[in-house]
Image (cartoon, rainbow, N blue to C red; front, side, top):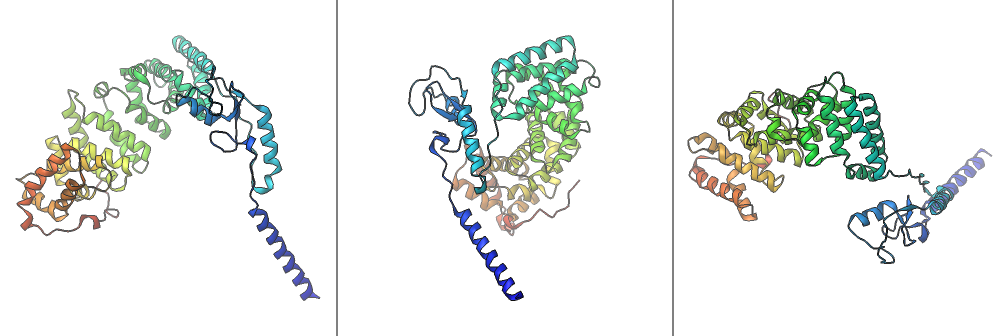
Length: 435
């Protein structure tokens, strides 16, 4: 009897599993009138054009943003670009999703009504008015409203940016930075957070962010303890006028501190490196002093650490900064005395991108001096000669080609003194940090 009961359970379980597998194998067919004519996918936010054809909002907005002025289906010229929500179709799609939920179909959410340019412009006008009155609480409320709109959809973000909100928020940041930063820190943090997704700001916005008050405020946040505000400040600093930024005190120390703490965070690292590159490659009057200060604070070791572990964008920027540092005699000496620098730069040749290889060749050209025989022999030992030959064969820009040719001529006389090793087999991942 027990055996019979066990068999019945086994048969029932097997039958149930078979039914479930057959259920999963059923292909759900989406009705054609629920599909967007452009993407052919299930519409999640159906809207109707003036021609009477319904599309998914994201698809038709991309079509219009591509400077297309006709209806994709009828090819009629659009007399207006108004998108009217088709609530009837949307509710039919939602009902169909519920009916087919057993097949893994999820009900599409009811979309929020997107904001209009008029709403954004009106809010920006109120922000300007609040700034002129010095009403930081009202300004904070309005900026928070823009932040909520931006979180709702990418379409809202594009609308906000297109309405010129970036320049208005830059003005607000400058306005409240001109007074006590401690007194207006909350509203400034709110503005900082929103402005990070409005880059680039345009000439007017950059002008406001490049004022002495705004730059001092950005550096103040960069030196602070709140990680989110520090990251936002780092992202904005790479957009400002570099000649004005070079005049701000403590900016070098703040950037090095941020870079040291953000290695491993790609976004913050790239933002800091971009700002540092702007400073060390600029035509600012105190450029030499800025480079020397960066070197004194241990930037070379930080750059090499970023090159070891960094992704493509990080490696390119770090090599670019290292190349600029080698233009300074003190920076060049520090690079030459760092045992990791030469083999690491050679290793990155032809392994990251053409831009990174161009920076690497330029660095090698500056540190490989005929008076330094030991450096030349070491470069040959890690395989730079073969890599330079390959680079010339695969092709590169004229400047890199010229540097590579000069290096090859210089190194050729020392080949009999070096026992070459393959730099591609060198592993730097487990080296201890030099700082």
